[in-house]
Length: 453
Image 1: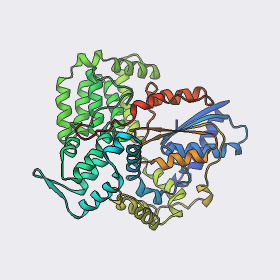
Image 2: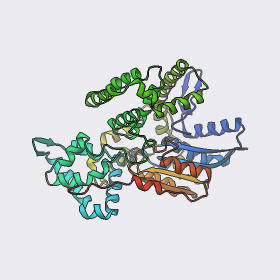
Image 3: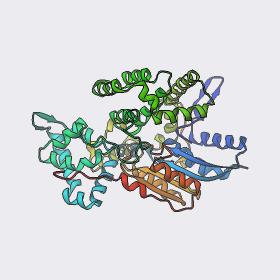
């Protein structure tokens, strides 16, 4: 599993940034597999890990006695051929193109909200000039953009109705989304099919949703899981909420924690399975030792995310030297809804490599990857880190690929073996040549909120 992994090289002078490259990491992965005497392997790449996976696919024929690559799963693809500065303005924009396309494809949504693309563009232009005032509320462009970008759980299904209502000066759906009275539920087969009848699983769902889902919510679930392995899970959960959930979200979760008992946690099948899996993985039976190991793994998880030198070097070697900020500006002016994009972030990205002590790779590092290895490309429909066009490009470049668009999902979508996406990915790995059963994705499609509904 490749998820931003690198093997940093150290010299007598310190850290050698020149080794923080995708090509170096790809070489190290293959050499490690050779040293372990693997005859064959499967790659699962996530986000930047997909770039590493695709680089391994490209380089593997150049290695002597390399093990056979049986198949590859790319989750939230970021192909080497992507030019980052030009793509950056699209990250907070293209999910809306996907949502509008889905509305047009649905007869009920299309009929209820015709010409929605132009109506949204006009609404954003109007709000840019003047906020909307109704029912004692003042709604700014930033307020509306915030709701438009909340597209996971079932929020997306309410956005067409919100757009049309705001166009008429009506705030009903906007306020309902803002307050979380609609659109905050988990769709079927989401986040491991968590069962809200179990108080512990219900709390995890609420915590996930309090962070707006997506990557932030998924990361929080990891920390919640570590807390549940603690010797005093309830105390660990309280400390976690206090640290990471300020304001209203923290108050709501603390209210739910007040009703959660040690007995309910102990009797939760989710917790029992989590503890059993962790103990089996670690080979530990003593609860105190298990708690200490959980804390150590949590700290390691945090430290592993603090990889700014790696992040800078990858982009300063493989991306930014081949672009200018003006490439991002040109992309921005091509957007249908430029108000959704933040050019300050694009400027920050373009300035990233000033005085960074690395040299650019040869331009060939941006070449499309060519491979005939069976590859499954999993793409979240509302991915704001690696938008849909990146997944489509990866699928187009790889001759033997299967592209699967997962509705109402953002970044990093395969995290659980038992849910819909896990079943699809597992079936592919078992038999990459078989036709995939994608019927479980039907339950994830938006159930559009129509007028009067």
